[in-house]
Length: 324
Image (cartoon, rainbow, N blue to C red; front, side, top):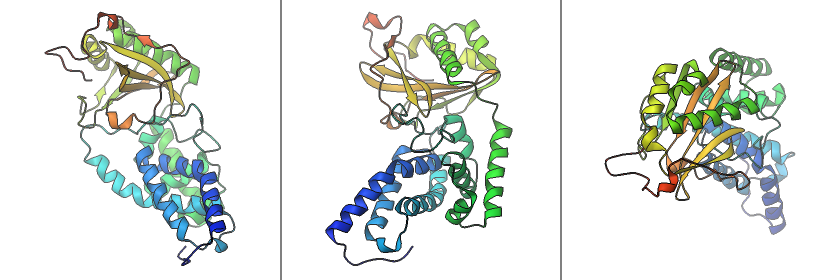
């Protein structure tokens, strides 16, 4: 992909813009699933666009296939630096949520490789294995095309996808239905707000893990909290300060329901859960404000207001600090 042209006719530029714009949802879907960050995905697409601008388009038979190949290969390279940043991240790193209300599949044929729990597991895979899995499971690419994109033979491409599937299956229970996920999240938020220990224990799986991402900006636990009893007591312990003045609005994030938390109209955090037939397996608290820009409150859903929000108390009372 090294062929370049010194100048491009205006009509060719228009065609290049049109081709890139048409392919962009797919390209973003690939890049986001690889990197777990909307900001990083956008940055990578800027690089793809610059390369596309200067490439000899007469050598391209299928612009979408070409652009997807460039995006995937750049994303494979970018995962190395992304992983290094995640390892030095302050506290626990969680994927940046994306709003999927308008596009539940985020540019793909299927919603696969989009849920938070899956993105966290993909983070552990080698970059080429992750790419092969994303292309197959989310975008339904044939193995021959996957092999060409990740630069292996077709047998190796099948093996990459198979290994990724086995890895995810070994570390993840069968997820509950979207309706059950929303039902348990709604019940969890209500119990968390009231500090209802008994209900929290009923909702949580025995081996539940709670992750909190504050990014060094917001106060958050720097290590996961593990186990039904510990997580229940942990959530109850901050109930009287965390939820004061907080409004809750249900949003679609990464193909699942999440609770967007706001204080005086400003985004404050987001919480969601992963659910199986054992109950809530994972609780994810996203409190880093830099990760909430892509999430919009759903105006069609009525906000759930914390019981004491009408008391007009400040978000953080003197001597109390928000955090989980």
